[in-house]
Image 1 (cartoon, helix red, strand yellow):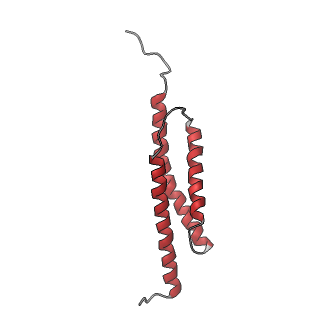
Image 2 (cartoon, one colour):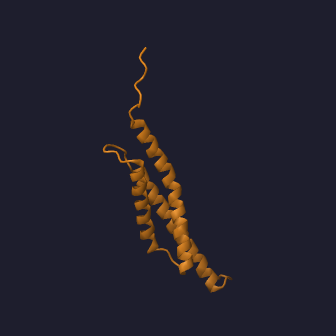
Image 3 (spheres, one colour):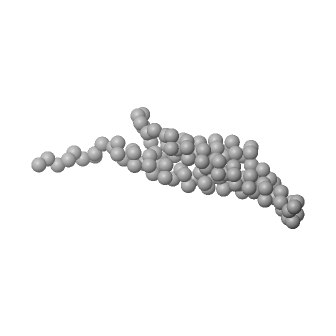
Length: 113
């Protein structure tokens, strides 16, 4: 039998449930990013940022309906989810930026020998 007061025990269970949701959201979002194939037609880096931010907002809104607890706890969980997704976005955008650079035509013709 638990020696913790019921409210503390309940709060810990809610925290665990929210942590599990954050972990699931992070994993699912990572799968989405890893499934992306860069090909023609290319979009600008700025447009890709908009697309990825839209995906992130979609995930946040989806998980908003599932997080539990008092409003403050729910807001904290959603903020933590946003931070986790942002950590995945930055390397993805760097990869996309590198891809765009690899597709650029040289601005100057190579010198002839």
